Image 1 (tube, one colour):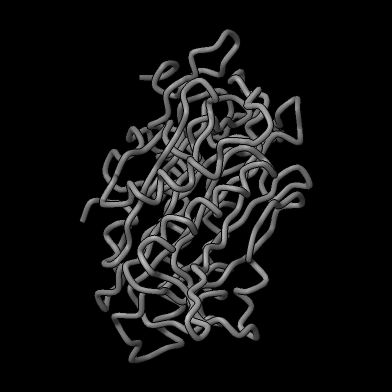
Image 2 (spheres, rainbow, N blue to C red):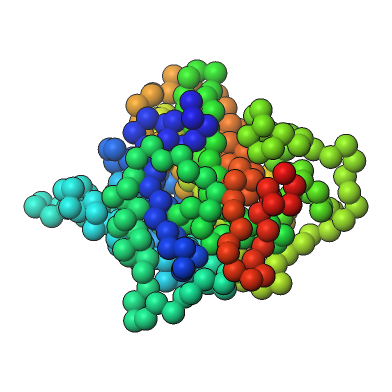
Length: 328
C-alpha cells in the first residue's frame, strides 16, 4: 500500500504543469473502462460530461477523469486526454467509431501570480494530453498537476491522496486538488481539521488541539471569494453499478466536511467523482456499501490534509506560505 489512489488496481495517475503559468492538470486513467458517478455540492461548479454519469444515461463506463486548473479554460484539458486515448484506440464504440469518455472538472487559479497571457488558445488541452501520456503509478503530492496553483484561505493548497482497505479486502483510494475558499487547518495553528483521521504522521502528526481556539469557530474565507473549488476522485476495486458509484460519491463528500471549514459554499465548485474498476464483487451489498462509503469519507479527509501538508509555495511576491514553511 502506497497510501495513494494508485493502490486501487487498474488505476493510474498522471500530472502535467507549467511553472510559469502556475497551473496544471491531473488525470486519473483506468486500465479498463470503469463505472462512475458524481456528486456536486459547491455553488459554482465547472464540469464536463457529468450528466452522462447519471444512472439513467446510456453510457455505462468511462476511460479517464480529469481535474484541471484554469477555471472554465481548463475544461479543454479533457479534450487533450481524449486525444491521447484515441491514439490508443480506446473509447465507447459506435460501429467503427470510438469516442473516449472523459468527464472532468475545473478549479479557479487564474489570479495566483502566474503568467496567464497565453495568447489565443489556453494551454490546457496540451497539458491534458501530456498528463494522460504520463499516467502511471505517480505518487507525487503537493504542488503538482491540478494542485500546482491551488490555494486555501491561509496556506498553499495542492494535490493530496490516501487509501485504505475494508474488512473484506476491498481497496478505496482518493485523490484531491485542494483549492478551498476556507481553511484546512484549525485557527492559526498547525492542526488539521482532519487530524482525528490521520494515519501515522502522514500530515505531520500534530493531532487535534486539546481545546478549540475561539477564532477557529469563525469561518475564514479568501478575499477573492470566487477563486476556489476542491475537486476529488474516489476509486475502488469493488464491482459497483452507476447508482452505487453515485452513492459512494455522496458518502465521500462527508470527507470534505471533516477537512475543510467552511465547505460547499456559494463560492466553491466542490465536486466528488467516484469510480469502480469492478474486480471485486460485493457479497453483502448494503453492509459493504456502508463500510466502503464510511472509509471513502475518511480517506478523502486525509487526502485533503496531505494536499496542504505536502504543498510548496509559489515563487511569486505575495504568494501564500506552505504549511511546512510556517510550522515544520
